[in-house]
Length: 140
Length: 137
Image (cartoon, rainbow over all chains, first blue to last red; front, side, top):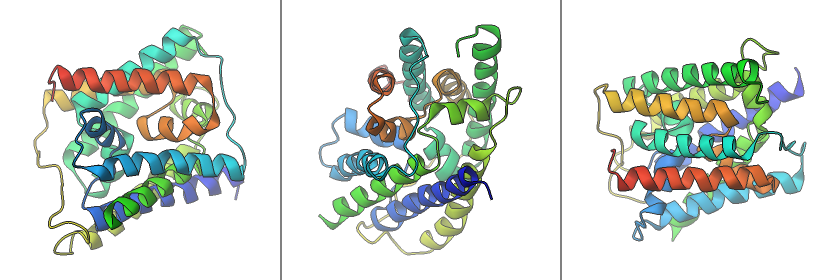
């Protein structure tokens, strides 16, 4: 088996395991956009949110430190596009009540109808957007 | 304290997993989303293995009377489909398709020290904060 496929499967199992750990011990859904929203609105009594986000960053740091293989970076995308993309991801996840982790991994894991519809919607719109951005606008 | 340390550990596993999966490289995501280009199938394996893990794991977890460090599970209560869900997810999809970063991936990718990711995360936080202020949901 190709090593990128093997890494993809192992990475997916770790992402799912992280969600199981959080639900089993803390009783919360590992939806990153929702956790971040709680952090931004200073739910100070909910310390677990800060610890989870710190861990998320730390997990990335540990991986880059071990470098197996290091992540390739890209800088070809025009900065205004990056800003627009970030705004849309933030606003969309907020209105839609979740992102790839909350709806995609955890919601589908709970067999939620709402998350199934959300996941189909964002994957379809992302595919359409990528196609237009790459082939019509030639952005990357 | 145990609750906080376990949250930190859960976040760490997520951040490491998402990095190992290849998703912190936006080109992997873009090549998956672009089904008309050189299609990169690896993201299908990430999503499927993550969902299979949670489908099995959550069934077992939710049979427990309560989480280990809390008196109750905090689960979404909405059941019905509505316009906000569809419109929000569509907007999210456009942003995801433009840059190739979703929220968890972007935070873990800060570790790559790529300037682009820092700009993306700042904009994403502004988006999350403003829509919260506007009380969209």
